[in-house]
Length: 298
Image (tube, rainbow, N blue to C red; front, top):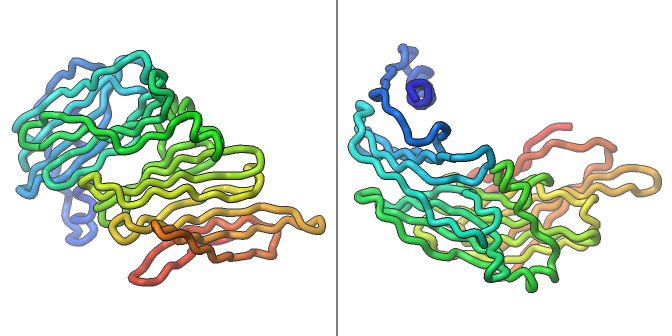
């Protein structure tokens, strides 16, 4: 555990090193033992007085499913003020239950997880919330998708997420967790697939867990030809920008078309960026002030 906190404070000290060209100040907490042999930091936040709130996830097995969480509050000298061990109740019918993200708002810390509930035949996304003053938890449902209803859009599998514990937007993961630049809103995207179309179920929330957007984005193109690239959350979660890439072969020539879609509760609008060269570009979508910029290379 000594290395854990050493590395954590080194990362925080780097901006000071660049600005002042001074040696970083290294602080270590007291040596302590956990009840679990394996844990790692999933969230950290300043408390406004120089101290930190830290959330560590611990596991009792080799798979990604967490056994519980250590909630800790340290002062500016890394003295432990208080801590709490939270182990959500687990039921056998909660299949592939996995943490996908952690957010905070108004003195609350929210642990967001997803599961397939065999009993209810539905995919459920839940928030486990606690006030940082007492670490007392309550649970609420953010959204659900019935297995039968989801069939009209495609198939969703959580097994890859469960065993890898990676929630990013790419073709090897079916669940993505994204926060905006100001950390005031977040999105959960579900990548649904069939052979003939791709669907992204998009949900956005502010950090007080108020739902801002619920939208099924459907693209009628073969799954192997279309890739969701990245998502940018805007307007406090009231809108989102989605970038996708279409790979086709026309007249024995490969082409790549990038699609930028602005999504709100009122609908969607798409712009196309076509590349005539037979190379796959690496593009990143950025928002600067009121401008949307694509930066990359090929």
